Image 1 (tube, rainbow, N blue to C red):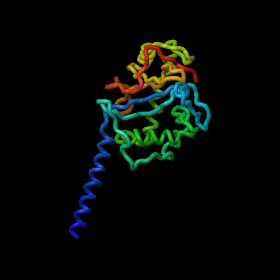
Image 2 (cartoon, rainbow, N blue to C red):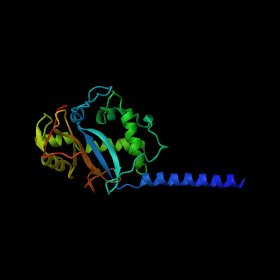
Image 3 (cartoon, helix red, strand yellow):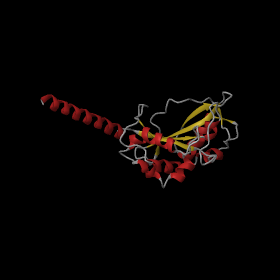
Image 4 (tube, helix red, strand yellow):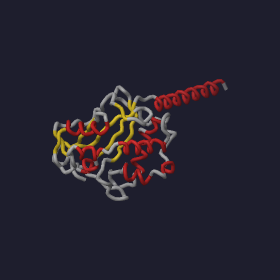
Length: 230
């Protein structure tokens, strides 16, 4: 009887420790990365891409994610296994997400797998600030705050396969947003560096762009990079 009682106490303690670890992971972060992706660069690789089942997306930057991060460059992930993605919670956002947050992974999909991954890996770590609906709505709102493609076009930087200086791209985005971005590149089938993703930083309320406390350790770009068409 005594062994059973002690075993029950141990289980309760383990559960409590697990609960606290999830709670702390979900609450403690320092800022968000808001990441936008150029579809032309996603598709112009040896791996290629697959258009969503809804058809080819518009030639515009699409959302990749809204990612809680720490000032030391690390980040929390998969913070709440008890909060799985529930597509019924974003039914009113689905049309906007298909337009602004499209999947390009193969095989072709409707976006659910992509959005589920983003919520469960990153969104659950911001639950102290945003519930599931708010998480996706906030990302859509942030995208509406800055038109990256127009900012680049205004500076004469257009997706026509030409090469542009990395500094001119950064300057154009800073001019439009007020903040310096981090640019991630990938390579096309010929091995040329191309504009792939743009990172901007957002405060913990997920409402204001801020200066990035730290930049990520992704694929860096050369001094000249291509901006491929889509």
